[in-house]
Length: 322
Ligand code: CA
Image 1 (cartoon, rainbow, N blue to C red):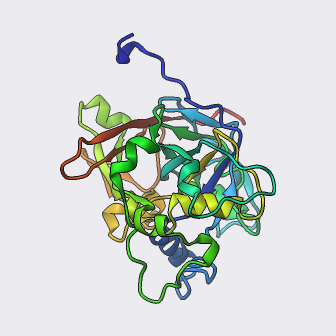
Image 2 (tube, rainbow, N blue to C red):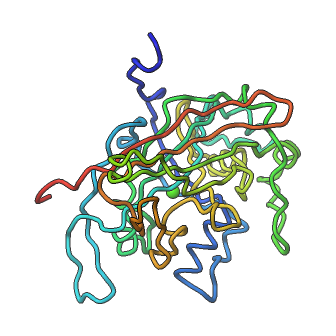
C-alpha cells in the first residue's frame, strides 16, 4: 500500500501515559509568568516533575481536536463560568515508549534505564490555558489537558537512535548534581538525543490563500534538563511498575531563546506578544481551523538523518451547548 493511501493508526495500545516537565527553560518561563520574583520552584532541580496523564484520549496524527469546554474564571470575574476554551494551546513534546517493564515494587537502576526505552515519537499535549489556570492548584492539570493528546504514528526505535545519543547540555551554574539514584555514567555521557524539533502552523485563511505553513517553534531535544532514562528511573523509583507500551512524554521542549519556546503560552508570553502570521492575522492562542504540525528529525554530521514523520491536527469548533 502506498504510504499516502494508508490510514495510519496508533502503533501502541498505551496502558498508562505520564507527562513530565523536563525542560527547565519551559518551567522557568511559565514560572516567571506566575511568580516573577521566584520563577523556578525549589524542587525543580532535584526531582523530575510529572503527573499521570490520560491514555484514553491519546489520538493519532490527523485526528481533529475539538475545542474543549471547561470551567474558567477570568481574573475580573466574581465567579467561574462553563464555556468553550478561549486559550487553546499546543505543547511540543517528545514521547518515549517503554519496551521492557519492571515488576511491581522493583525499581529500575539508572544505569539500566536506557534498556527499558523502546522508542520515541512526537507528542502534542494540547492545553486549554484558561481551564488550566483555574483548576491546576493544588493537584495539577486535569481537564485542561485530558481532552486530547496527539501522537505521531511512527515509532523511531531506541536502537535506530543509538548513533544520535549524546551528553545532555551542561547544567546551568548553581544546579545541584542529581541524587545518586538518578545518576549513571550512561545517562551523563549518552542520555540525551540529537533530535531537532519544530512546530508549524497554518490558519484556515492561510490555507485558503495557498500560503505555506509558518514555523512557530524551532527547538531541540538536548534542551531537556532530565534525560528520558532519568524519567524512567524516577517513575519506577517508588516501586511503580511500568508496562510495555506505556508512554512517557518529556514535557514541553523549550530552549533558551524565544524562537525555541515550545508552546504559545511562552511564545506569545501569555498572549501579550501575539505572533503575526503571513497575511496579517494575529495569534495569541489557537483559533478554530488552525492546523498544528510537529516535526522531528535525528541529525548528526556524517549520519543519515532519521525523520520522525509528523504529528498533525486541526482545531475543530467547540460542540454547541456542551
Ligand atoms: Ca505537557
